[in-house]
Image 1 (cartoon, rainbow, N blue to C red):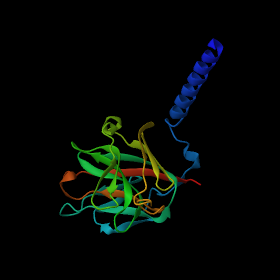
Image 2: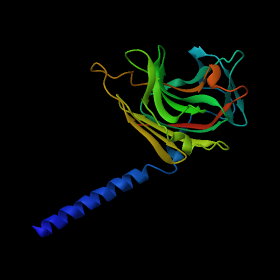
Image 3: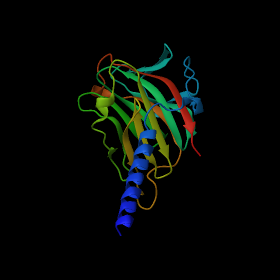
Image 4: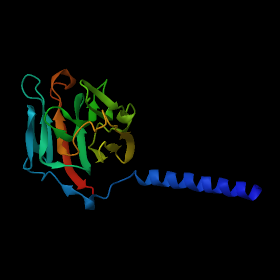
Length: 226
């Protein structure tokens, strides 16, 4: 009996160690050799204003897509021409203070999407999963109050997002640290949104964007999953 107990304890410790190693393996720098660029660093080829939110000002500057509000505090979304299903999205993001931006996943017309927030302002969160609710309204699917502590205000930040399946599991890493892990649910026995859509980046309209603030995205890449 004592030997059996010791063996059970040993197996449990091995299991804990294996889980810890698996979790640690998810952190750190991604292998970008497996990714495909979705921004050529020179033009906005392959991208288009999203028809429902086509405002804001987008330009390419020093190898980055730079966004700022248009006249009258106007915002908007820029999305890929191509639609994607299951993937890892990588990008390096620089923000001035304050502003509200983010990555949009599987975005389609009629408010169907998930957003990874890069809400860099006093009341904001970095790395939360946000979006419209299937039954109406919108808000946080899952918050990430500690996300801002991982954000470097002086440099480009490395952001990795993984979305797979439907209802999707969505994971977020910032500068090599996993900061959010969300599993969505069925709503009325079906997923909240379709299983594919565009990738988008945002300029938020209104007062959440400071006068003269700007966001810059570079090295935007994607790795499609089976």
